[in-house]
Length: 299
Length: 206
Image: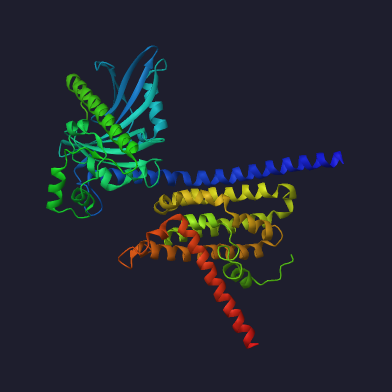
């Protein structure tokens, strides 16, 4: 009796283990086979979102003269001191510009790497780590894209993540050269469907478009319904001149909260404000350093 | 090995006399939760069809190696594996559709209809019979979901496949989850009524 029970148990254990192993192998194979395609899809989606917040789509493609320049920001820690390093595209290559926390230039390291190699986070991290030396710890912080057209900066594209009602909200945002808001898109969020989830909606996001840096900083969330004409103007598929006029008249308004989701609305406003504020500070600082050091960046 | 139904009968049984939604009343939660539009119903139906076929085939092939005491965990593992594979493949091949139905796919692991088919059919019958049974049950579920989705989408938002047919929204109520139960119940009654009348007529003829 005892012996047969033991036999049963061992047989169950072995069979379950084998089943799990087989299942793991099948899932692993499927993952390996589909991983590249999935990553490519995400990249395509990312790019489409980027063009759409810049206002380009299939019918209205981006001009050929437009070029994108990606800057990666790294945090360097050497013992007690922390510095910030910007991986910037220079004339023929990439260069690492190190700046301390007060904004003073520390050093510049030329790197031998092309843009496609740096796009992969793992390879980029090892390139940066090799450049700064083994006694300095480097950590990737974020990245932004500078959009150029005809020798002038036309827009900045930033990726951001800030706390929402429950977890993080991931967004992609476009700023004009004068730091006014071109628009933003919610990439990922876990707000309640039907309530906070409405932050995805065009009529809500559209309120931020066109706001200058000062207007965005001064904006609050108000618990009032959005005026019907403004709402219609924002969601219009083919905006008329009249719509543009209505939006221009309301551009200085506060943010109208989503009904039943004031916290989500406020998180988005606060998050966007913080993102823009931090970015403008960093960008001005980087520009200053580039100018005084005469670094020949491509943007 | 005790199965004496033909392949065609196996398929039609899943769609008609043993329809998972209207006859067996299994997997009602997803049927109610996701059948708000025809498209949602169709997508979920297709995913269930594939998971059902793969799982039935796997269990039927390995039925002699499955220890009877742990058959349910084994079924769950099998279903979870195929759901994951289909989830990954869809994400890679149809990113557009996946963005809409991604969260539904993972729920298929807990679908009663799939486990039930493995327990009552696939673990006893040959792989080929299991395959046709799975096709029938999967199609039956799909037909049920599309039918419920059609009624709810038409009555709730006045559209079908996203195309505006009525131009207005007759009853917003039909989009809400609780209406799913009403629609399923009413359709179940309707199909039973049709079947009863059909039987009556057949009896009268003979």
